[in-house]
Image (cartoon, rainbow, N blue to C red; front, side, top):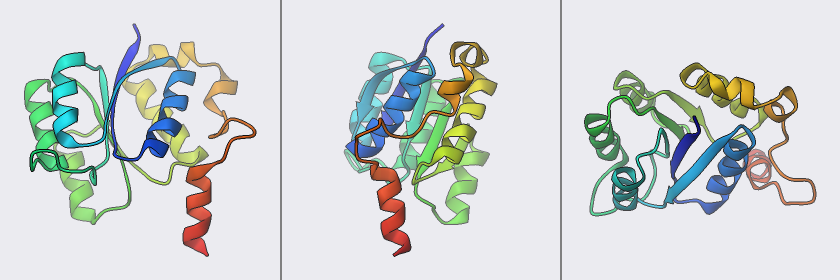
Length: 159
């Protein structure tokens, strides 16, 4: 069984990093959305088995990320929704987790956060562990020779 992923994030950079990792561990990224309206439409169209959601995604048709989350949970409560977002106020994180988010992974994505993401996914989709060898689980975030946008962004914040 292939894990079908819908990624909801307005940043193409973040989606590219996540897509590369999801594909390495045997997931199939079936759709990407840059705002909440696109995401809701795609959610109903492609029937993903996993959704990643940035809480700061652009509002489409005035719908917030929390409203999108609640709508998706009401329509398909068994579909895991993984929050991949910048640090937010603790109460925002608590709301998403208490209402059923699979986890809340902080951006910028680094090796440690991807290992945590992989562990959470394996808990929900045990067959992923057999599909991804040890070398893939510890894969670098960027293909050699490509820019490493997530790490570069982290360095610039520290400067």
